[in-house]
Length: 158
Image 1 (cartoon, rainbow, N blue to C red):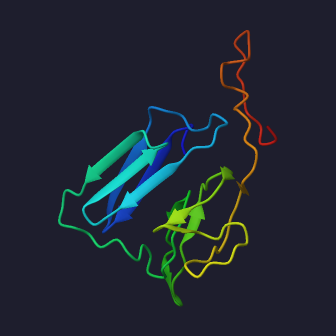
Image 2 (spheres, one colour; image 1 turned 120 degrees about the horizontal axis):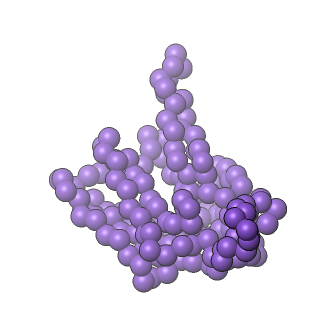
């Protein structure tokens, strides 16, 4: 999410692909449903089942799974891959991660165990700045409440 807009970035075979739904902000205090579909031939990103961006692969089909050599999968962050050192390549780490409320994540029809739920499909290795199932409040700066040339800045405390 960048400036309230939904974006997806994938680095596959050293080719960066970016999809975005910029026509509708998602930081409006409401719950939204985001769907991401990855196949070897196309990528589809949708918001609330009505705003859709779809791209066909311009090249031959690519192998998507596993997404990382160690089988890890990151949601809501830019992933940095560490340099190769004496002990091998450092594990990937997340940067500029998602901050906000998250209801659930489904992967191949299976809900990921975000709220200490058990799952035979996946394990959550870490969360940061994410509140699970929290109450959302609208952005206090929407609508420009400040007057006389002042700028509204949303604080982390709301």
